[in-house]
Length: 467
Image 1 (cartoon, rainbow, N blue to C red):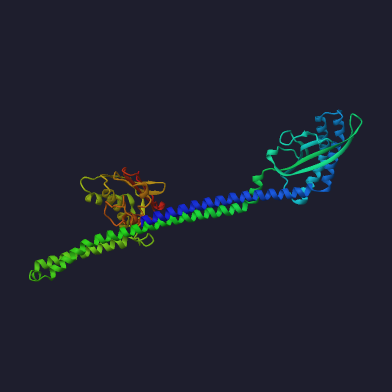
Image 2 (cartoon, rainbow, N blue to C red):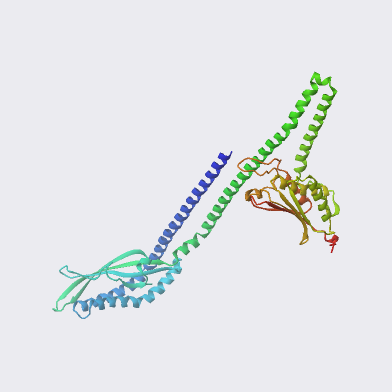
């Protein structure tokens, strides 16, 4: 059973880890796919805005302004830097209109406000009639010229497309000859999405929330199942132990009864009245022992709701003194029994038999578990009668402390039981105290002894302290 339980738990944990890994992978994959899908959607919408005759006309005007300045450059009237600056200024002059148009297009195409666009010139070449090429702007080497949109660093954006344009221009050179020049122009289109991750997270928030709830549900289910498995195993072990224990307790009287019965049926015993009477006495004693054992199991298994209290009003300090006196008479000589009982005249309604049984059970347990010094203290505090029983015995481990008030539980170490009992004593004490509307608790450490607390509520109508 233990091996199977460990295998099931290990399997459940491995399955949970695998499920978590798979869910994490699928979640990341979904996030990544949604980012790519959002980028494609945004690029398509941007294409719908900028691929219009209006934007083409704006681009045409600043390009033609630039082309008209090329003859001045070729004849030495302006420098290359001045020529490129002319292109930049011409585009800047028309960018205000473009941005206004682009923002209107965002609303029309339902494009997110955080999606930015820019167009820049990346390559410009001049080719003369002899095929000689002059590079005014070299892609990935020279700083590109910003044209339209919102300027940002290219590394922060995504390349949408490259657009090429070729144009012929005639001009009069310095020799007063007509010359033709070919302009090759390349523009790059970029977009940048601000707070990209936040946008996608917002879109997938519901999906992630459902996935999280499912994940929590699975973890809760696995945890609950493992806890239930441990609980069922513990209950099974306790029941098996109880059956073995009660069987052991029954074997002795049954064996004695068997011997006594055989003696009675023996011919020799029939002729000897003394032997016959001894056998009958033995049978009666063992029968009584069996009955007491059965009564102990039945009575000590009662829940607090099943205990029928025969309550009477007593002064608790006097009652506890009587219980201690009776217990002291049976205490072994090697046990030091101390008491500190606050003298009061507070009356409380209790069942003397049941409450004394609970106190005696705890005192007997102190001796049973190797306590040599036992101290019982009674006092009233915060509207409670408090009975404290402290010993210097073997103590209780942290694990066992949570279970000692459970039915049939017995302290065990390494699957062995060194102390006799049916595992009903402290359970019975707990039920008796609950039947009196009280509280029982224990403070203990292994090898450092135990302290049990019984608290019974005070009946305020009968308070009368002795001064």
